Amino acid sequence: MCGIVGYLGKKQACPILLNGLKRLEYRGYDSSGVALINGGLEIHKCKGKVSDLEAMIGKKNVVANMGIGHTRWATHGEANDPNAHPHTSNNGKLVIVHNGIIENSDSLKKLLLTKNYTFTSETDTEVLINFIEFVKKEEKVSLDQAVRIALNEVVGAYAIAVISLDDPELIVVARLGSPLVLGLGNNEFFIGSDATPFLDLTKKVIYLEDGEIAIISKNGISIRTIESDLPVDAVIHKLQMDLDSIEKGGYDHFMLKEIFEQPTSISNTISGRLNIKNCEVRISGLDEISDNLISADRIIIIGCGTSWHAGIVGEYLIEDLGRVPVEVEYASEFRYRNPIISSKDVVIAISQSGETADTLAAIKMAKSSGACVFGICNVAGSSIARESHAGAFTHAGPEIGVASTKAFTAQVTVLVMIALYLGRKKENLSEKRFREVAQELKMIPAKITSMLNLDPKIKTIAKLLDKATNALFLGRGFNFPVALEGALKLKEISYIHAEGYPAAEMKHGPIALIDENMPVIILAPGGGLYEKLLSNIQEVKARKGKVISITGCDQTEVKEFSDAVIEIPETIECLTPLLTTIPLQLLSYHVAVQRDCNVDQPRNLAKAVTVE
Ligand code: AGP
Image 1 (tube, rainbow, N blue to C red):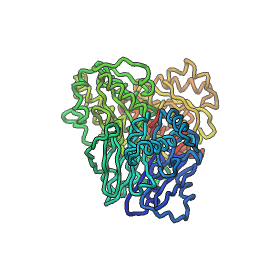
Image 2 (image 1 turned 180 degrees about the vertical axis):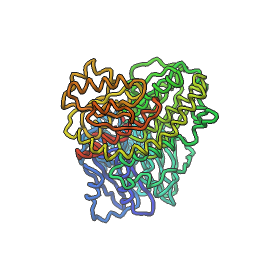
Image 3 (image 1 turned 90 degrees about the vertical axis):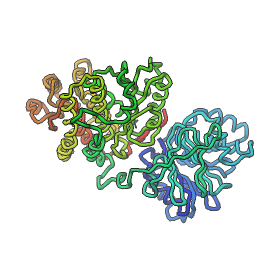
Image 4 (image 1 turned 60 degrees about the vertical axis):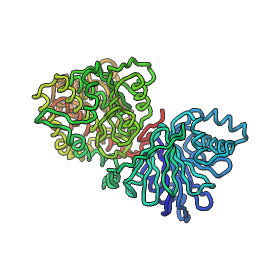
């Protein structure tokens, strides 16, 4: 939701903080700020992007070796200068940056008001820093102890960094429910909501765990538990990401780069996990819970947004190939509807970021009811990856664009392998069928490469949607969830209202919407439902609807009834989502670009929704 950074060392802190914030802008970007200590306390913050903050700091010679920074996605209080982080306590000495939500900030604020505290913002964060100041005064304790004691009174989610004018060589950080990573350099230390702010400066990281507080000084890092103040042995990991993997690589936008990365990312997802000769899927996380999987009465797939769409593809795959009952739930609904969960259930939680609050909370609820939880994440060390009993990383590489693309196809790829694994383990899938699917899955990256040559044609077709205010996406079977995903892509980056529907549902209402102003994107690859999709296309044309068809090379009838046709390579039906998705990603991208929308950072959205 928001991004926080910090630095303590020998270099100039300000440029390191600003560069780090730019790399975190995909997490939130309606305001940003930095706080530096250099004998005095220097704070610069403003509404807008990090580039606006950089311009504000401009030529000021900000000399400091320690500081913290923040880029915000508003939760409490609108996006404006006073609500921008960092926030300072009343005595002007304590400063905080925060990612998360303090649920009991109102009650804390009421207490502080009785102690004559004043507030200049609407944020829960300013309440928290003043509460820390209050505790420090009342308890007469050190900065880190004041933070720890205060956090024991806090209800909510947080990742915070706190500095003080009285402790110019100390940064205190803590987390519960929001991510925080510490980087270890040569006598210098880095803080980030993830590792991207400093991954070109050090590859050694510590992932702070929920309920931990860390004291960072020139002598090193000391980690303790927030609740009991017990020492924690830090585990140092070596980062695999490198800098160019997060740069745009010559593309105009991260989203386009990530669409074009899909042949590579899907190859990486598959790599080392398919043994076609022995009809085996090698995913260690599946082996860890194979008994649970084999004895499971059902599988419940949970996720949000695009991850939920991948979950529906997973439902069709696992029931088709694995013959295990599957239910798919929005994590945000599942966590609150008092569902019936038992130890005979396996929950598959899908999340690109591994930090989505609703998905994380749904996992914790499922675990408390005895279910076995398997996480499918794209970020190593993420909260969901660490909260799940077992899991598989999608290995799609960092996905910076807010609109998820390569993560979706990587998630579907993992779900294909899970379906194959289950089918073989439960003896519901023949070796012949296993090999047919596995061999075709290995061909998918090459088929996507060939499809990316359609980009110029799709850019032209996108013009058909330029003035659209609505759009319908229709699909059947495995491509029904792809229709949902295509609609989400279009609406979240071009701001055109779009809906995905099972094609057969048209006659149950949506067909009333069809006229010459309603573009309808229909997924009609070859396969068992082709004839029915052809009649759906004719129904739309009969009502003057504008039809854009995504179809196979041999489906000549579709071309006759369509205003535009995008041909995709043939594949087996259960793998068509990996192909039909690509033109929808490119279509939404080009529509957004031609409408001059902010493709990588669409309005109101953030890459990781780490609050409810
Ligand atoms: C997808 O393009 C959106 N950015 C959004 O729906 C996203 O899929 C959703 O917030 C879930 O995120 P996660 O996969 O990181 O949990």
